[in-house]
Image 1 (cartoon, rainbow, N blue to C red):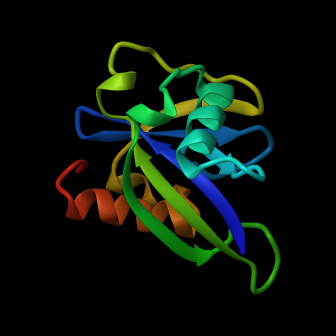
Image 2 (cartoon, rainbow, N blue to C red):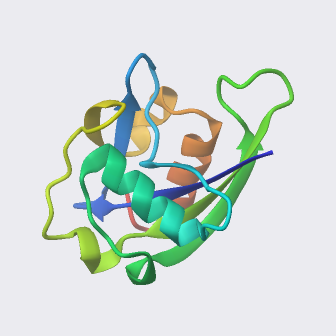
Image 3 (cartoon, rainbow, N blue to C red):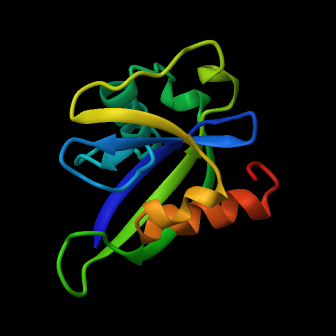
Length: 133
């Protein structure tokens, strides 16, 4: 089971996603939790590395945990992704592609076909919560 955390940044009823170098799908900014690191700290660190957003782990709010098939990891691979809302901490910052990220996009439910299973599950949760269209 892959243990990952991701930052959820919502603006104008769209959620921030990234496209990693050499990949054809959209992901939430995030990645693997390092040993001894909290989920919020991992989401904060990975988002900074991938988008330049600086949001302190203590400013993040847990939103949900998604467990589903892992994208591009081989048969039977699963991922557990903790989702953390950025809240006001990211509102005054403009994200940009950094690190292994080629592009950022603001996504709604119409982009579902461009997302891996965990991304689709996240979009559905955000729709159910009334945060995105």
